[in-house]
Length: 92
Figure (cartoon, rainbow, N blue to C red):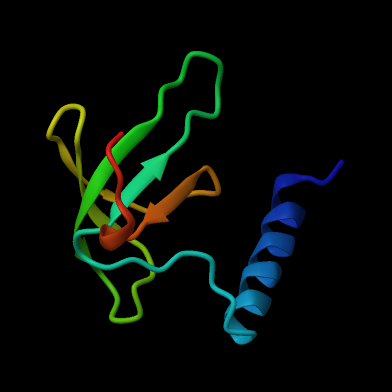
C-alpha cells in the first residue's frame, strides 16, 4: 500500500502529465451547472449554478450557488463531480 506522501507525488505527476497533454478534466463557464454525486451511503446529489470561474481557461475553482439551500461557496470539484453546460440543462 502506498503511503500518503508517495501517493501525493504520484497524483501530482499524473495531473502534471494531463496538463502538459492538454487533457485537463474540468472546464466550465458562468451559468453552467455543477453536479456533485454523493460518495458515501446516504449522501445526496448536489446541484449548483456556477456564478464565477476563477481562471480564463474555465478550470477550477468555481464560485457556486447550491440550488438546495442557496448557499454560495468556492468549490474545487473532485472526481465525483461533472459540469452540465447551460445550453444542455434539462429539468431535474
